[in-house]
Length: 371
Image (cartoon, rainbow, N blue to C red; front, side, top):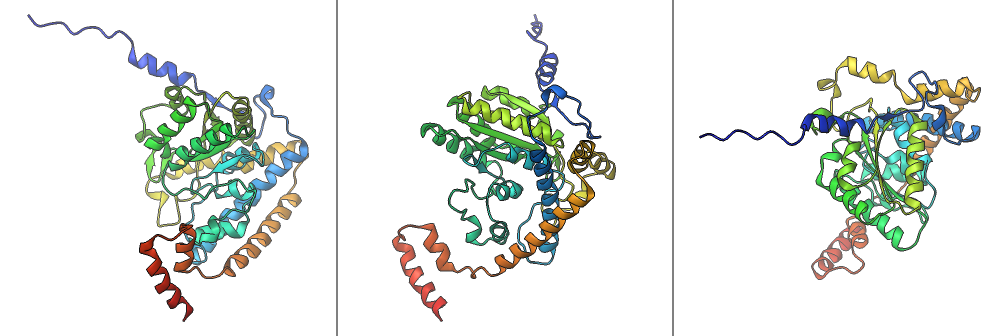
């Protein structure tokens, strides 16, 4: 006699929906720059609000000029950032100087505003070793090229801060594609187990190169992946600088108070290609989708908000744009003046004491370079 199929002990679809409902998108400013969540408004002075806008405008110009410099052959690797200014800069704005940033390759703006000189950011793009040597007291690591690897590193740096009794956090970033990597899960799980003061940001810009987020994971949100690690997760409107700032500031407060890490998913969009290395977004993104997200532009939204408060004007924005252009011109000139990289430079900075198999090579290259 055939056995009857046993009835499931739970409604799987209902369970999935119930989990996703716990992670609604957090927002303070809507697309029109209107406050829709007055109770959540962060305590930022007028000067701080204007400074955040200044950084966003400056970084949009930096992105435009970096793309041009790349096309001229004056920069190497470059990942465009336009559209992600609120996610990147408002999160950094919520940090303190003693905090550590472990960036992905698109997260150069955060480490520049955290103290890395702009000319060194340009040298990083060129693959010059001096671009990876942050000045003393600038707590940043080099942008990580390996997808998701910075999540494991962040867990380690955060645990180190905890063991040393530092009142500081480590923050790291990846894209939605990075949240599909094993390193992502290992990083948030390790930090959660040891209550390390870490902040994990996933900038969900909808596409991992050309793969849409819907094909990367069956989860309805990335924020809900925090549940498996036993840590809090929040989904934030990544085009809203005030919401991003508050989410990161709250996560920092929790971490400093010994409550462990937080996973933050910022819903954002990159207006340009994945990188300048031949990616063509028109092959996988529709013009309708681009137009939808252009209406959510973080600069437009924040500009409307500040203008409504009488804190921003066309004249002020024009001044920031000219400042950015001048700084970029000087920075690329300084990068051009950096000494040409030599093989012996790389060998000497990779090892405190050269292993025997490289000593002979060092002598050979030293002789060649002296000629």
